Length: 315
Image (cartoon, rainbow, N blue to C red; front, side, top):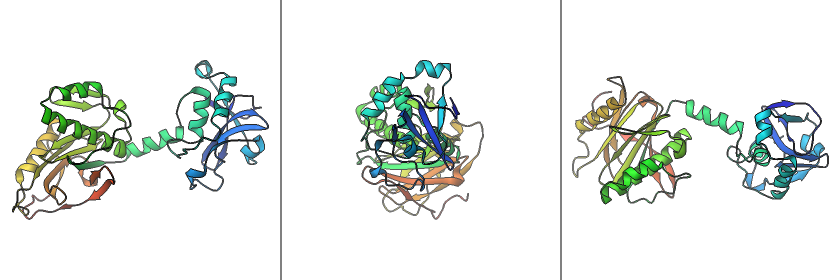
C-alpha cells in the first residue's frame, strides 16, 4: 500500500498527518467521511470513553491538512471489500466506542472497513519496540488464586500433553502455563497462538522467546526472556528464613544450561518474602534487568523485591 495525493473516491481509505502520527477514515463523499474520533490535534492524551465512530465532512476530517488516499497494490485490490460494502460497514459502526490508542484506534477501524482485518502499523511498531528491549521477568502466583482466562487459548498440543498427566499434576501444570500466558502477553506482547511451540525431549520450547517454569507445593513461577533463562524456587521451611539454600541456585543453573550453549550466566538469588516465602534463584543472560512480579487475579501484577540471604553466594 502506498499513500498518494489524489482525488478521493467512495470507499477509499484516507488519512492526514498530525505530527508524527496519522489519522484515518473512510471516504464516502465530500459531505461524509466516517472516522473513529477526531484527529488528535491536541495530542494523544484523550479521554477514550468520549471517542466514538462518527460521520463528518471532508473539511472537518482534514482539519486544514493534506488528505492522502491509499493506493492499493494488486493483491490488496483483490482482498479488499467492494467500495459499496466498505461504506456499508463504516456506516453501520457509527456510534461505536471502545477506543484504545494501541489496540482499537482509527487505523484499526479503517482497515476493518476496507479489508476486514484488525490491523494497525502503529500497534505493530509499538509491539516490536516493546519486544526488542532487554527483559527477564519472573511472575509468581499462588495456586489459591483463580487466574483470569487468556485472550487466546493455549496450544492444543500442549493441552493434550497436560491432560495425560495425573490429575493433581495436571491442575498445577495448567495453572503454571496459564500464568506463562499472562506473563508473555504482558512482558513480550505475544499471545499463545503466536508462540510457535515445539515439543522436544526435554519439554516444550518456543521458537520466538525463552521461558522457564517452576512449581512448588503452593505456587507457580515462570520466567520469560528473549535469551536463555533458568528458574528454580523452593519454599522456605519454618524457622529457616535466613538460611540460603545453595541447591536452589545450582538447580537454576542446570535449567539454564539445558537451553543454552553457554556454561555460565549472571545469576540472581535471594529470598522472596511473599506468600509463600521462597528461596528463589534465576540464571540468565539478561539477569541484570530481572524484575520479580506477584500476579493476582484482582490486582494484576505488582513489583516485588528479593531480600539477600545471609549466606547467599556472591554474584
